[in-house]
View 1: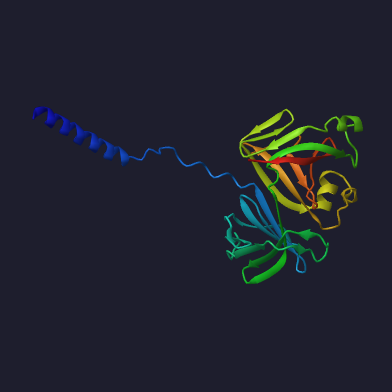
View 2 (view 1 turned 90 degrees about the horizontal axis):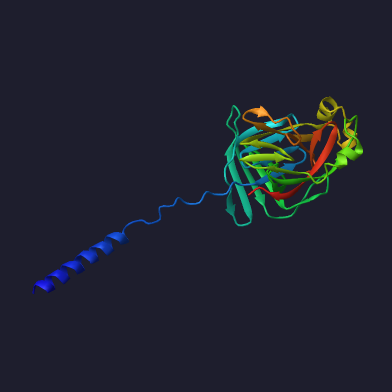
Length: 264
């Protein structure tokens, strides 16, 4: 009888141990982080002229009388069939609600005739605005390569010296910015829309016609900062033209960058 009691006791202990271990959560690893959104959505319309830009960090609503725009917090979109819907609130005195709907239906701009992937509807407070929209990789995050240059005015570089920059690479991410041999850890990116004719004439002493800019057309200026200070190296300031081309300026030369790959 004694051996039988020992065996029964061992079976009970083993059974309890198995049941207890089954209840233990062995998944102690935290869930993987959600990848940062690297997409920008831009919607715009004519008569009245308006633009609404949704970046991974904010929403910006612009009109001709306020090209710097009014900003609001970024909110992830919801999907309803073929439509993406963004909802947020502008940081103005009225806390104006915003709803942008991008429907995956082809849209043709009423003035330029260009085609876009989305038909856009923006509700700004009580106003309803119609236009077209597009999706593009968030600038400047990603990998870039110098593919060409322009010397529209006086420059400290010769054509040969500027051509030697072709093929240089740049990389912009949340943790590191690199242009050639220059690096910036933990960079921050600050962008604003500015009048292209004023920017080129005053800051660079270049005629807007060198880039076929019409009066009043805006350029997006992106400044890279390291620990709160401007990154004063090539690639530290970027100019995004209305057609989407990207330039960095150094010694009077406008170097054109082309995206190699978006940032992960």
